[in-house]
Image 1 (cartoon, rainbow, N blue to C red):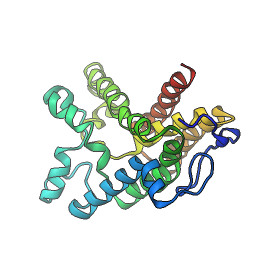
Image 2: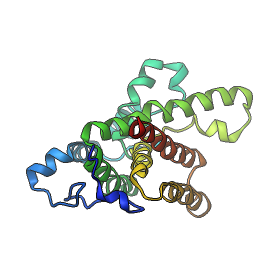
Image 3: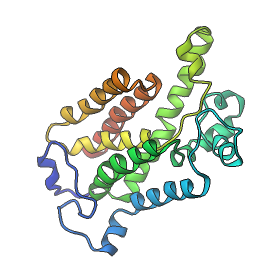
Length: 233
């Protein structure tokens, strides 16, 4: 971690993709070394799109590409039906996306702004761990929540909906990294209020599923808590 991070004097401690934590311009070699995870992830998800196309949250029978991506996506039902596949897919679903808007959201806002900024300050290993750990914390938490919830409220449309589709993409990891980056903010509470306001907008204006918003907000605050604990150790 860069202890002398000048971005900490700002409310939003973002850096340009071609710069380091001290706002210095990076050479190509330095860029690859400093932001290895961001570069790897972006190459990986766009390669998946180039080879397999976009995934679907419900249609798993149209083509072999759709079927393959459904097989490796996160399904709540797999927690009890196929636990090993459930665990495996926690590490594959971050690399699958279901539309151009989805992958651009994760690529541009998620990685070119948020994740690479975190990586410049905290390093590639810690950033990768922060990103991927959201899929073994937030995702399983909600899988358990819906699995238990459907038992108590079998007629709840909210609970039922969690089982009729898969959940995929890098947004949960992106929000957890965002929360972690908030520890470098001069006003962390302002940064943490942004995901809440953003998800209220998504719910009320764009009509996004409440399930997604809950995961995003939880990931943001969990990322902040985990990173704050590490920073203060």
